[in-house]
Length: 158
Image: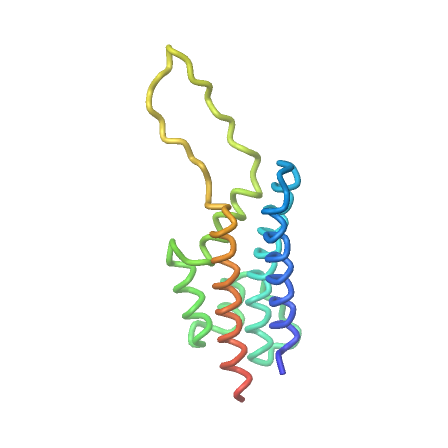
């Protein structure tokens, strides 16, 4: 039987995927943006619940660690989940970091773009932000689900 925290994370991922599934059916730009931002927020919520899920697996019934750092402070570096999550946090191509980038991007106002004219035609690298494509978001959601399924399986054997 799945833990309630694993079920909650799975629910957030399912709802995020449901929103992403609506993208192809909608040409309305504000609605598409709402769907993407909603899916990102649900993905961020799922990521935020992972330290709580791990704490519960280690019988910390009242703890609510809201970050990797808080989880490590609570349980220490010696647990395999801390190692796994630190490795994900250190990998710039991981789902953990993709969500980190999305959180920074979504939590800040849009960057004002400089207008181009004949007087200022200098090549400038534009920061386009993290990949918010449906495919990238689906990959991240799939990776979170896979990670939490492995954790659940590992601890349900006990």
